[in-house]
Length: 435
Image (tube, rainbow, N blue to C red; front, side):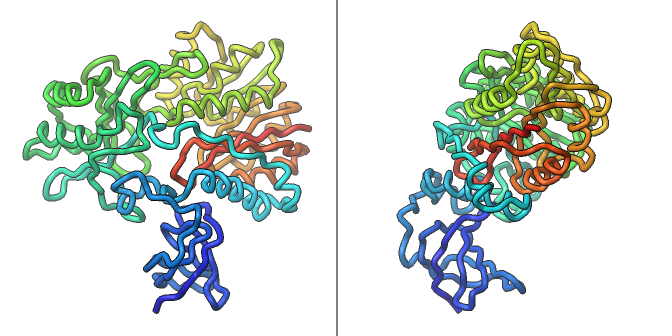
């Protein structure tokens, strides 16, 4: 039975939120704050319901027509039906909400601490990287995962990708179908990166270990996308993606990008921010917050290929950089040498290595979505740092860590949300802590 609901907000997820006539909270996919919708309940739990829209009875002023023809089936851009200004407001509201509910802040204090979201100049065509999922069940399929499903949606284009990658999904799928013929080459993922600044484009084919027609596939792929690099990453399928090796099939064997005039060479397995312009916004926010001086000792934990390490090395007296992933450590060392900069690179787990760094004037932490290990806040305090920056991609674990960090004598002075992912609910934050 359908029910009429007015939607009042967007969650830290794909759904909009409202209340049923019974007062129970309902989460509605593809909704927009301000919509009045007729919905059918798809899940009725004890404290909430989930529902799908049957009809938009009265559309919100913030409802827009999605630009992508695959919006309804592809799970990549769940907020594309929401006007960008409303997306920004919702992202800030979600950061504030997590700081209140999980971080334990009073709402008025949270509203003061969280700044306005720094918007992305481009809401489409901003991604320097896209990932396509592959499978061979009754024929080769390559595309994006369908919303809330492991099914693959085969699109011809991706409108949030850079211009060089916009038509890549169809082109790469056609090339790999031709290259494989009737064989299953074990391809389960294809990563594509392209830079508008360096004109570098890399195709990374992720396969199971085993035999592979290297030169045959390389030639076809290189022609399909004018790639400067084609590599094969051998790994076991699954979330862990344990890497067994990387083979250069053609070209340079790495991707190139520039941030704030610094050059980066990045291997296929290594992490790099997908929005180049907004990555620079993150760097500027961190440097401003840390107030780095030429005689200071700084550290960069979970440093990856050096997004923050290189700018810190330009401005600080000495920098320690800690990273556990092997490919990122190699990239970091190469990037420091490439830019004639120096940092003490430590290959290891940041939580374990931090106590060995000694006294610091400041540091930046940019952990994975799981946030900081429980021991890290106290170990940061033990360095004597008066100020540090926390870059987060997950408001929930960030808010949890805010409470832990303040228990160790620091106070959160400000948080700046930075939108690297328009059309989605994802948000990055740069937080400055002082004592």
